[in-house]
Image (cartoon, rainbow, N blue to C red; front, top):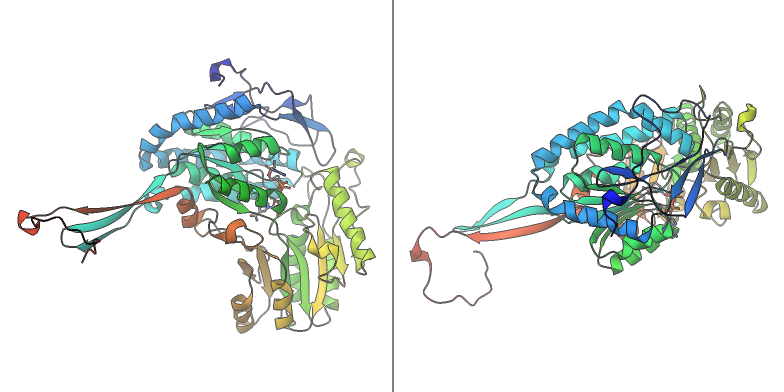
Length: 529
Ligand code: NAD
């Protein structure tokens, strides 16, 4: 293990008041990592180039931490655990209050870093921060959430429960929500008394690094939060390191099913939120203007790179009006650099992602669907964005479940459309899909909405609402292949607290009189009655 003092100090390129406001980049930086409350340089020679998706200009190089550095991060978290566990929940809550205030103070800075590295618009990036901030705010209720239960169960007998932290835990994050997803785990993991090793996406770790600075300023003790970088090797290290007791993973099925299997086989708790194919079902009685706007926003916003993006539209009836309104709404969206005024959607994350999305659009045509609006050659007018990873809003009709574009998660601004004969046929279509993250129905009938709710298998249902991500006093409740392990452990809310704690039950007897104690050992299984 390297001593932390032997690492070269490093700093972040942004401050609370100084951060990018456009797509101009200077000399590329090297992203530091974070151990013992310090930003330090990695000694790794394996560096991943990170480009602004709107221009493909080099922004920073992200190191893949060496084995020694990964071990040192766990050493640091392990060392910090005993005293953090002993720190009262009220003291931890005070730190979380400060962390929340600092996120608010650095909200624009966080959004700017997200826009530069991930590509989404500044307004959308602010929403990314907000949905994570809300988890940190909800975590401030820890004194209430960590209360155990107590029940007198017999004469002089009672059982009580305690929720104990697990120890060192880890989080592995995807690229599409660089602030929100780290904040799905960090506040709950730490306020429950665990120490954390977090690996942001190697494609946009900047927001997580700013959050690390805010953790340090909020007063988290050294080692409670450590941030490492890398890809498969770092993930395998986390999966196999015996001192890591639990892993929160969010990302694709390819990686997440592997993480779940290997982490679980190693005896760890694993919660894993995975890919999706989210449907909207529009009934003939729906308010079509409202539905079309909501669906266009949810399909094309964030360039479709949301696990809750509405990527498939089903409609009962001929759908002509609805589709026309959708095309009009999509054409009205401005695709531009995320810092540009009025931008509605930015680029996709990488040239590889653009090529993949475009090949899925092409496959739809080859499979017999109709491309009504084709975003493949779209790009912003400004020549500085000529090399960005642009895919404009795309609407494809006549889609069948057997088509490749339907079977794979596209993760781009592409809306697939199909007509269904009835409410039941729509429900069947959706339930036949292997994913079950989110779904939305648009109708003016309460009884249709209720029938849909009772028969649909998706875990998060929106009624006249396109992206039904629950606020953190609830939990993120994906279903089917959108979660590993059948969704038994879900992110944030009370289930999130349960994920990060071990229940301990204590049954105690305090006899008030010696007279109740018999002279002979009792050999029967205690029945507490
Ligand atoms: P990804 O699976 O490529 O990466 C996620 C994390 O896993 C990253 O930290 C990455 O370094 C690591 N990783 C990638 N491939 C790996 C491998 N083969 N072995 C070990 N580790 C690996 O996901 P992404 O492209 O960053 O994110 C997009 C995906 O995340 C989409 O499928 C999206 O639906 C999903 N997602 C799901 C939710 C949800 O709550 N269900 C939320 C956000 C994103």
